[in-house]
Image (cartoon, rainbow, N blue to C red; front, top):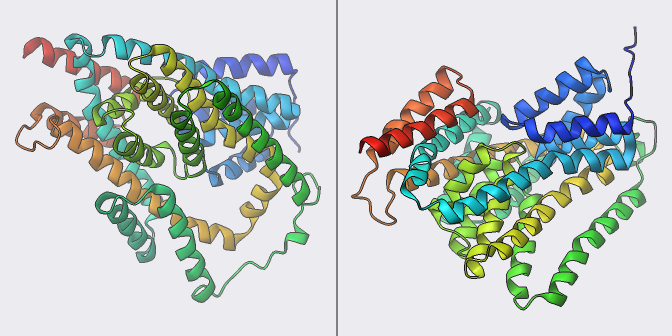
Length: 425
């Protein structure tokens, strides 16, 4: 028997999307669970099948899958206005909270008692990334080829400082070559045969129109900034960098954060390694997708570049948020037919699988990067060791990996541990 679907009014759905933006803790898994429990099980706004199909589509895309899923569900129920409302409200509260935290951070972050909280949070972040790495490894490193991809990915980014987008593109090319020469079982689906779930034909012109709208929305702020700014080079670098970051966010936020740390810290000098980890700690304590950490990076870039200007930092945070999430809306509004094709085409799925393996190597690099910064707090000085950091990394890993302690609760415990260490020592 078909399940009865009760499509809500736009106002009713708007209330839920607004609430979700403030309670979406727990990373993508927690956020997806909240949406499933409410829109499928409790309210029956969409069917189980549609929810799972939408989730499958979003898992294939670069970008924050939970935010894209919210956008997709909003679109299913109320078309473009529903998708915009759901997607924007998913990130807006988090952006606002991170703005407040960023302002507090640059004004009070160097006060010893405030800094003590971060001394406990940073080792916990290492353990959080490590547990995420293990979960992804179990799913992605299923054969020798994928293990080789992961090792090569880590070697490329850690030892040779090759940028993340280059690693992803190279992995796809290697996978294409492998598929063409070695994988005999291929999917022969023709583009002409593609039919969407709603029965409509795949229409390339519709996708081109969507790309045109995306380009217009991308170029307008850039032109406006150029007309009023005395330092367009900074803003152009920021827009280009975060746009590129949005298009290579395969495997979740932890993968792209390696790239962001590599470029924002080492190339642009927008913030220090320690500040980058502080931003990751702040991002873990706020609702919304973890990729919101990029807005902290943007804030610090504007703040530091324009001589400790909170106004410039705020403008940079807004610009970063806009260009980080604009591609996500483009993927949902214009790419649903194409996404559905990749969902049903086994050959394409097999080509994309090694990308997850490459992401595993990149996340390992992030884990090492954070761990080195925590354990050796003085840059380029390996004689001064943070023994508390080592101990708390191990304790945090055990609690998260073997006792399944809630991440938000453990973050609070870690902050208190840092405070206790400061008061006792």
